[in-house]
Length: 149
Image 1 (spheres, rainbow, N blue to C red):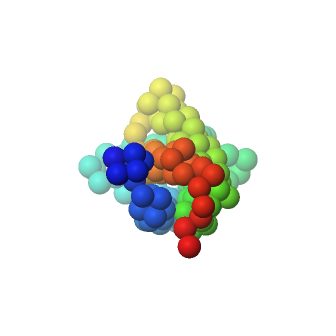
Image 2: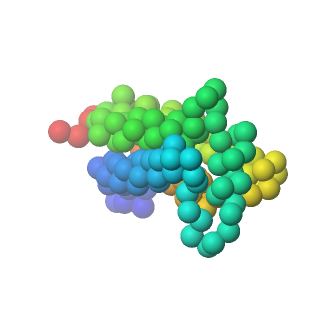
Image 3: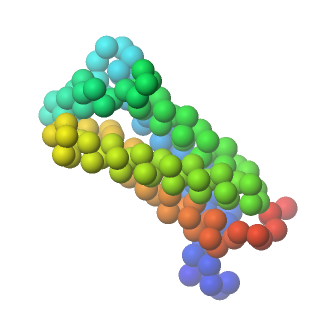
């Protein structure tokens, strides 16, 4: 805890969120590009689970690759991290909440329906979980505070 009793300085939370969002954009872009090329992300451990996940009917929602939807979510989170004040705090919290919930749903599908774990999808879920934690801390710790100059 900082001397003010808050978890972290808001500027630190914004920087952490921005870095995580950029990494998330990279991971989701890799998955999207691999799928668009007719393949799948390469599983680092040598399994074929990433291919199994990409080939499942759950890898697309309303015709859109869920990783492409993830890119959009990460871009919104990046924009929220760059936006000072309550507008950025609220947008970041809502986007992270939606992204975290969607990641939980997709992880459930991998574990209990598809029966395959894509390492890249797990990486994205971990990144989204960290973004949710950072944005919760920012929203709860700084709501109503003056935006830094």
